[in-house]
Amino acid sequence: MSSQSTVAESLRLKFVADAKDLAECVGIAASVAPAKATRPVLQSVLLRAEDGVVEVTGSDMEVAVRVRFEQVEVGQDGALLLNAARFQQILRELAGERVEITANERGVCTISTSDASFQIMGEEAEAYPEQAPWPAEGVFRLGAKELVGMIRRTHFAAHPEKTRYAMNGILLDLRERRLHLVATDGKRLALCERELPEEVAAPVHVVVPTKGMNLLPRVLEEGDAFVEIAVGPAQVFFRTPKALVTARLVEGHFPPYEEVLPKGHDKVLTLPRESFLCALRRASILGTKDSQSVRFAFDREGLELTARVPEVGASRVRFPLDYPFDPLSVGFNPAFFVDVLKVLATPEVRLELKDPKSPAVIREGSDDGWSFVYLVMPLNLEG
Image (cartoon, rainbow, N blue to C red; front, side):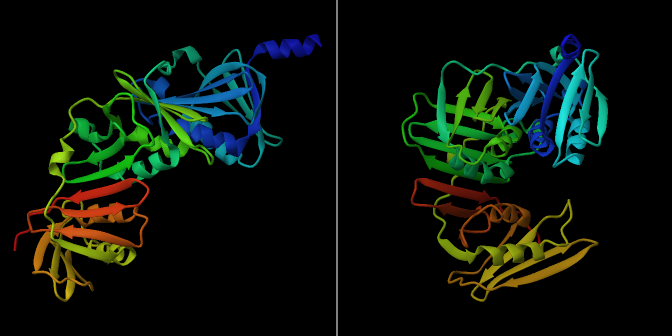
């Protein structure tokens, strides 16, 4: 009895879990941890066992996620930092087995199954940045399934570079009973709007890092009805039964998106989504990083997609459609259309056009209170 007590006291951490399930939680936290960081501690995930539950946290100082893992047998409460990539790789190799995680007072973590054992060095948990606490007020809820659908239709349009200020995130614009998610990179814009079941107490107008938004579909589980959201002076919080996502708000002023929403587009077409997507991919095969332009030539015979890339070659794709309007020739980046066609759910897509200098517009909507608008700015093609 005394021998068992001595062993327990020498352990900093101990729990047993299914390696595959644990790897999924660690994978979510590890997706936030940067591969390279000015602070090496950020390359680790924080393991904390307490009250019969294990929590795994990852952070890059801009976005943090804490995942709750309950399918576990905790033998010793405690906390430890482990290298995210190394820990995740080991767990993946042990998928399908029961794994025991122990750590001694020297920080040596042992990961073992019935026929394998690994030891990696851990670090003190106190060295890890603390995740901001959940706010006491200003909390509201959104339907989980609905929010994920809105993120899916907007995130790809955000600018990937942080130097573009407010455009490298997704605008969360909440007023009265309407929620808008908006993303733009200056060359295209995606707007998803949904009616809420009840009016919000106070309006919200903040830009959330795309990385933080994209975590939400990963932490939601089947049966989760709502996501709780709270907005502080500098951070936004998303909470599900499984996880807490914290993101530092993007600074800067988001472009006045409502002012650029098009009007007067008189050429309205209905296209089969899959066939249109296939034609666009074919037309853009020869595109390069510096040349991503295709000429869209509409006439009574349909649509002709042509691309000419210097020192590479040329492509020409005919796409049959009903076009009862005056001929129109306009240039677009085909990748911008491919991105949106991949996330739309309808078999047909509504395309609106006006003239060579106006954006193309794609719309989607339903009878249950939501709508989607996507704008693609035209390119100036010579010749």
